[in-house]
Image 1 (cartoon, rainbow, N blue to C red):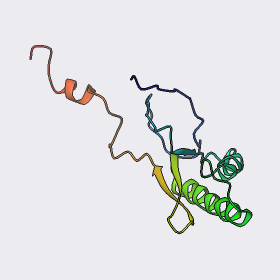
Image 2 (cartoon, rainbow, N blue to C red):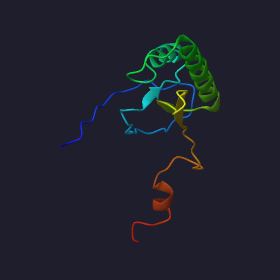
Image 3 (tube, rainbow, N blue to C red):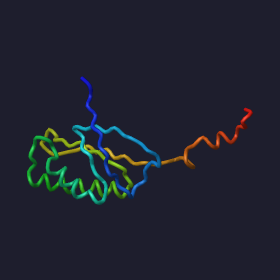
Image 4 (cartoon, helix red, strand yellow):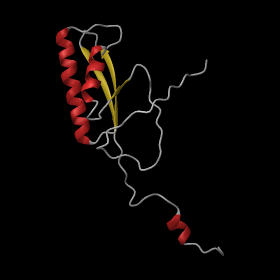
Length: 128
């Protein structure tokens, strides 16, 4: 069976470092959920994720409140750390406690200057 790929453009936080070239990334669709760190989208993201945090399970009001607070803390910390995008994997422990795993991706360039072949080509003459 062929794997279905859904392409969706997302608006990333404009205040964080990002590659200065066109790039694509493949993210798992399920059961991971996109954690939007864009300042204008943070509240909507928290509402969306906390409303259906664990698929097929309705959380108690107290648990939803904790999930909302924790998501807010994660998003605020991600914004402060310059995280480009995040994913959250919600779940429930054997004890019945709501839990999650979070993956945060941040861009960091260690190149001293823009990557190109011009410095290499300048070392060689046309005759070589």
